[in-house]
Length: 462
Image 1 (spheres, helix red, strand yellow):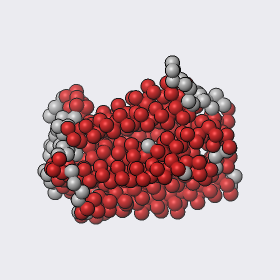
Image 2 (tube, one colour):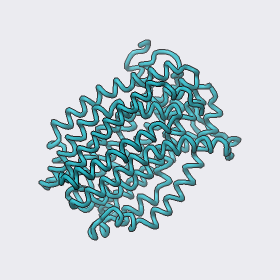
Image 3 (tube, one colour):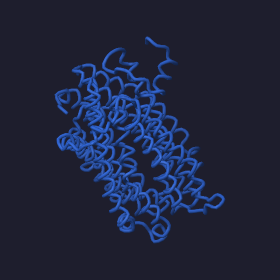
Image 4 (tube, one colour):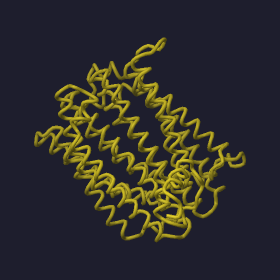
C-alpha cells in the first residue's frame, strides 16, 4: 500500500474523499469497508443491547420483540431495497464523475422514502393489534406489546430514511457519514434503553414500550444528522435548492431497481415471518430462545454486510467508470476476505454459545433453544459469507432482479417447505427450523456465484 495502514484507517474513519475507480483495489476496499463494518457493528450492537435489556423484563417482552421484528423486517426489506437502488444509481453517477446528477438522484430517493414511510407508518399504527394476532401472539403478549408495535410501526418513515439515505452516502463513496449516523442513532438508543425500560427519576418504567421509544428517538436524531449532511454538508452529495424538484424519470428508474431489490429482501424476510409463525406453535420459550439466538447471530453477521456493501459501491462506481473487470475483481476480493472473517466468527459462536446465552436468560428451555440456534446457524454462515457479497455485487451493478429470483427459489420454494416438513411433519420443532435455514442459504450462495461468473450483470444500464 502507498499509505501506511494507520493513515488509511484514519482517512476511512474521517471520510476523506477518494477516487475508488483507480489505484490499489485492496486499499479501496479496505477504506470503504472500515466505516461500513463499524456502521454494521453498531447496528448489530443495537440489536444485542436491546434484547439484553428487554430480556430482563420477561419472556413475553422478548416474544413481543421477536414477533414484531418478524413483521418489521418487511419494512426493513423495502428500506434496504430502496437503499440498494439508491446506492446503484448514485454510485454509477459518481463513477461517471457527475456528482450533481448523483445529488439530484439523492433528492428523488429522499422523496420516495418520505412518502412511503408516512403511508406504511399510518397503516402499521392502525393495524398493530391485528399484526400481533396474525403472528400468533398470546393474550399476555398482546397486553404487554401492543404499544411497542404501534410505536415501531408508527416510526416507519424514520426507519426507511435511515436505511435509504445511508445507501446514498455509501454509493457516493462517503460511508463515513453512514457510519457516524448509526454511531449517533444506536449510541443514543443504548443510553436511552435502560432509562425508558426501567425508569429513571421522573421517567417511569415503561418495560418493552420504553425500548420502542428509545429506538425511535435514537434513529430520529440519526436521520436529522443525515439530512444536515445532504443539504449543508461538504461531501460529494450536496442537494441545492435548484435540485429540489420531482423528476419522474429518475424516480421511475430508481423504483425499477429498488422494487426488485425490495422484493429480494421481502422474500427473505417473509420466509422469516413464516418460520416465526411455525416456532410460535411451540410456545413463548421457543420464540424467546430462537429470538435471542438470532440476535447474537445478527451481531456476528452484520459487520460482514459492511464488507458486502463496500463491494456494492466498488462495483457500481467502476461500472460507471467503464471498468467492468475491476468491478468483478472487487466482488471476488471482498468475498474472499468475508469468508475468512466469518469463519473465525462462527468458530467463536459455536464454542462459546452457552457463555453468550448467560447474558440474556437463566431459563433452561430458553437457553437450550438459544444455544442450538446459535450453533447451527453459525455453521451455515461460513458458506453464506460469499453469497452475501455476490448478492450485494449484483445490487451495486443495478441488477437487483437476479438476486430476487434466486431468493424466491431458495427461501420460498425450499426453505419454508423444508422447515415445515422438519419442524412439524418430522416433529423436530425448532431444530427443524435451524437445519432448514443454513441449508437454503448455502444453496443460495452457490447459485449466485455460478450466475455471477457468467458476467451478464456488467451490461446493466442504470
